[in-house]
Length: 281
Image (cartoon, rainbow, N blue to C red; front, side):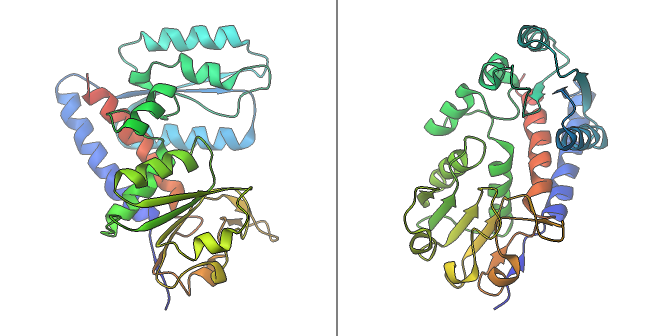
């Protein structure tokens, strides 16, 4: 068996075309969905992420506002700027690129963003909405994973899903989304005594820990679906995920590559969330 690759680039293009057409409908009503992106400091990876997000907005017809601030920006100045964006009717989504400089409390910054503009889905109100099945914004990476499962027509009802990782950004919300679709969910992490025993039971595995080869072929049940959220570098410096792709590809039924898998979906779901924020007005 060789797994079918779930092409995140192709699915992203399809979803972005839908975003563009829905944006045109809003523009006809005098509304242009607007995303404000705030970058504090000179983190090289953050600069790349921010540039990609702004370009994606522009390509889809959304209005994007990019604001860059020096590393020594005060926490109060950042909070004040967020509050002014909360009040700005032309801005429907606010994203503060993480990580922030150490003197700024990231959680305080996230909570300062209006839940109505929390297109990253990190606010406690968004997490609570996801937990209780209420309308809200879903974090973009796990939301993208769900779209990938939907795209291959995978019915999660009654399936056993194992999520490796328990972060607030991916692991925990991923588990909640899978649960909403009637999967039985196990969350594994660094204190799980026998990860392999868990993953061998799984129909769906989501690897999201940021560690190379955390999932190898001998840990995967034949025919399982494997979603690789990790972003690492191999010994040659090439981008790779958390999954031993070459090995697992021979066992799984579907697998996401890195790059070209979950990554493009993350930015696409940010566009979807921003569009929906504008549509809810």
